[in-house]
Image (cartoon, rainbow, N blue to C red):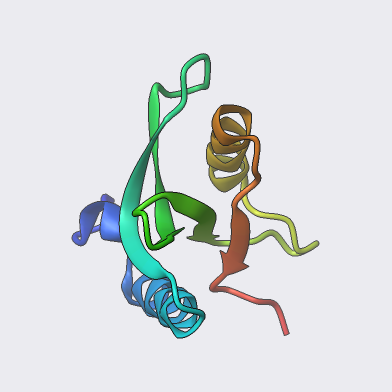
Length: 103
């Protein structure tokens, strides 16, 4: 069943994205949600990181991906693939923020 919120994700995902964006802003960067990243040669031609932190020149200086993690604490496969594509394209691995931390 598709998510009624589309790529914005469910409530837990959106809450974590807002938390990450607030932290980015607190550190003096501009948070941009669903920031496009061209990923030539990747599994997809373009990815959208959940939040990018832009500097004063509007250049992305950090990337953040929000998603589910496995029981052993790794991002689920779809998040790993997206992060791999962004890392290959930008030379920097997005920081992963799980929203389903196991207790």
